[in-house]
Length: 303
Image 1 (cartoon, rainbow, N blue to C red):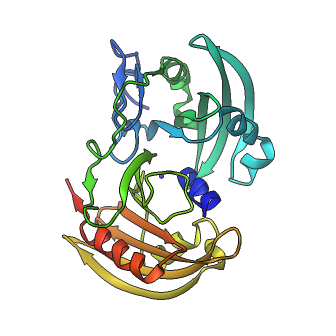
Image 2: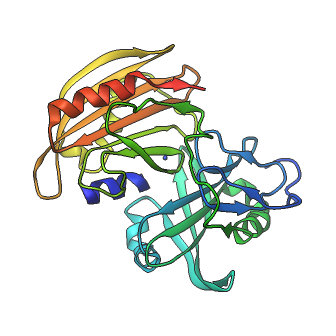
């Protein structure tokens, strides 16, 4: 379960691009940045976006050692995720060490370029990811300047619940908010991530997607979860929460030691190409936790 949750965390040009005047706190993180002009706060992720060009800057704080994460960015590992490593080098950053990585990745008929800054310590890694279409490559210097302007402040609040455009209620469930990764809010029974205990994740799509068949899309999305291809789906049914329609799916999966685990997923579709997704995992007290997952999912609201 612990390894599965870790992978779940990794799984959420026009105009002027001169830098803005000063650093801007990034909600849901302990980081600030000087974003390029024209970039605004991301709607479904922690960072900034430029809608017209399809470009974004995403910031993630992962509970994993910096060196371990850096070592994992190999050409082979990136290739397995559809990316090509273009460059990887150590750099001096804010008086310490960091790693600068550049990759390319095709998606939906477009080639995207990514500039990635990694820094951290033995307990956590901060990954700052600048993503832009190849057609907008002239903005690369401004994006690089923005990434390198990142400042980490341990006293800054990183509670992303306050800035998210959605909410759920966890009162009476035993679950508590832990942190956010790529705009996805993470909850667990023991207040830890990663954890062996039950978890519940809530997030939204980062871009528009074509969904001709909502049920099939929801099932295929579940199959893309870690270990998803071996899951056995027991129930799939329509659901309506608030004003949003979608599908609720129950499945049986396996932990890394082959212990049976409940996987519960709800996808809600906005009708304009976006969706919200909620995923619960539990290998203990599955019936009890299923009811808790349903209670939390049923409380979902858009702000």
